[in-house]
Image 1: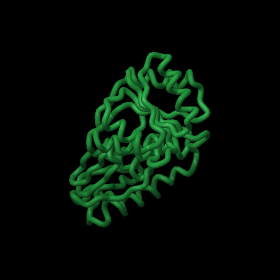
Image 2 (image 1 turned 30 degrees about the vertical axis):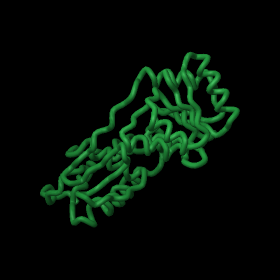
Image 3 (image 1 turned 90 degrees about the vertical axis):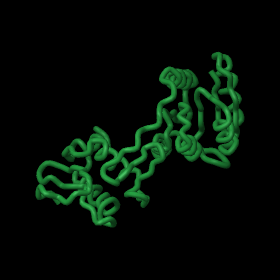
Length: 231
């Protein structure tokens, strides 16, 4: 198994290289994102250990470029201590798992072996409802050939709605799928994001695909006019 470690902390990179080689892996090391991207593109690695904070090209951008190029090598991202934004960015960029610094080497090896057992994943399918498309891998949304910019939360909401197109989703279902089970804020946040999403995916195009089913929830349909009294 060949592993690429992309880490700008020389001492940590060498420690990981020695430790992983002792575990039986063949290990290459890059000290910046630019070299890391080149190596990951030119060589068939079985997994990457990738720091998110790198000179030249940060780890999130590096991972996102690999995914956009249909390179689905398993990626374990190293993030900052208590860095929730780093963790979210790692997953949004296409990383398979993350580990916060400082970390246990034993845990890193266990996570890495778990990724290797799983193997390479395939590119997620592009979702389509009418002429609205969402590409989870490239993190792109478009109506026809016109791109639509969304925030990460708006993107997650649209992805959930498109995955279950034609179904009415309650606020609770949306909160559980887009926020998390522990969310204890105002559930009306869903209405706020639905309104924002309509302004992005429907209003500029004269469409009415994101419907409110009063007293029940929200449903994403194709672009035909509403006939059920929804708004």
